[in-house]
Image (cartoon, rainbow, N blue to C red; front, side, top):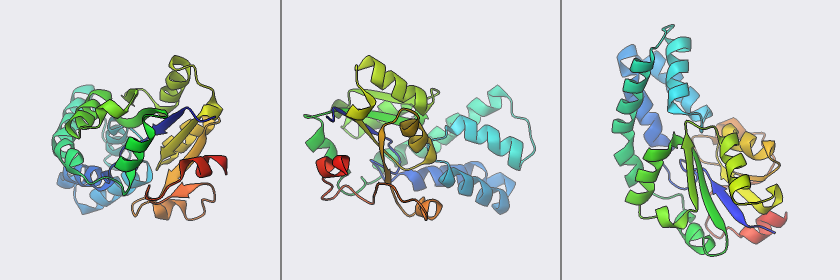
Length: 215
């Protein structure tokens, strides 16, 4: 019996993946268009990976530079400055807000995101939807740990949860715990899942959770 729902945020609740792409593009603009293209391409193929891990990877792999903790923190803070207000203003995935409002009285709802927890809380409060969620999990903890905490703290079994995500990190966290996973496809990830044959949605409009969960 379903008792809880885990949502990623960017690309699942809000159409904010492009916002993050634009922020990374601006961050790496001084290094030229080829680097920007590599950075944005990797970002869009690896949703759910924290910005800290991405920035460190981009510096080491694309720029051949070692980045200090101070530099990493400064770039991550600059990324927040570029992204947060636009994430707050981003439109909802079609039907997502209605789906959340319809679901939160029946199930415990959770956020599992690569965004820093404090920043995610700020975004949810600004969008007036924080009250719908039992708990919010963000970085630096990994999504596999998020799910472990959700299971333990709420005394839930894996078959009592469902996870909506749009990236491999979401999928891997769900599969690691044998939780039903539904992939949300959108223009920025669909090319990466051409051969994906499991459960997918493109929006939450007319999405019947009970039927989907029983498939």
